[in-house]
Length: 285
Ligand code: NAD
Image (cartoon, rainbow, N blue to C red; front, side):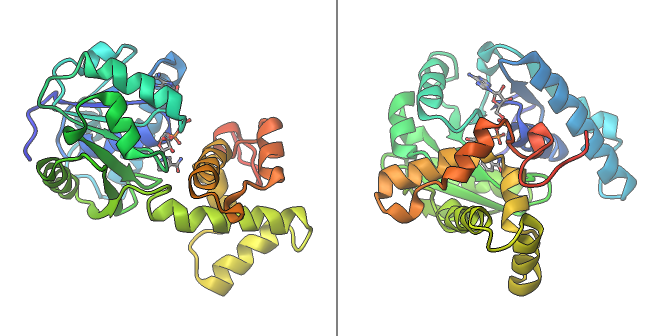
């Protein structure tokens, strides 16, 4: 699909929303980034600016950074979606919050817009039902960090139309990413496989089998992972990891998905990972 300028909206200006908006801007699309928190909009703008500058310094940007950044608008109201052809939601991993957002979006977005969630684990079929027009709703699940990761899971809900799937696949390819189409199932593929490993690493840490650096070094040098599971959990956000594990545990019903109590304690302590400066590892300001 080819998008007219000004026709993309990304809801949520956290790490994923900012990354998704950046990728659209780099591909030449104008996009509105919408968040309820003005501080998050500021943070997203400066984070995207820094990332684009870095890519430009490495010679990986075809245009001046200001031109790319100039394609993005940062907005506080969902009204910014009124003429959007594509809407991608990247708000927190909470089903009630997302359901409420999609019910509100249904009254705002044009009748032919493609509407997608970047959810890591929540049922696309249920979110599509909350939106109301399920045939044009699906999951478009980018990986973190979005500007660097090639893969995008495209998730068809039970009622998603074939035309919507094809539209999403070509959109993802147009962004320079590789889509893989999957069925709607808890955690889809990426998180169904990844989260039990992260949870197990948290368990090994809690039992004192090794320290955080030891566990991550073993998985990097011993299993060839580019990043250890605890550092990856810090990158994803421990609150997001917990939400995903809760969905897997509740929906699949297998105790192996039960979130480790240490994960909950980390969140109780405000240690959410990189976004708060402290997770299993410390991060500079
Ligand atoms: P985040 O906490 O960094 O950002 C969420 C943003 O949504 C915040 O800026 C918050 O202010 C905003 N928000 C909250 N309520 C809102 C509302 N009603 N309307 C608009 N904005 C609202 O979270 P994130 O890590 O960017 O994750 C976002 C989504 O992407 C989640 O569904 C998550 O599961 C998914 N995801 C995350 C990762 C990851 O590695 N973190 C990877 C793939 C997918």
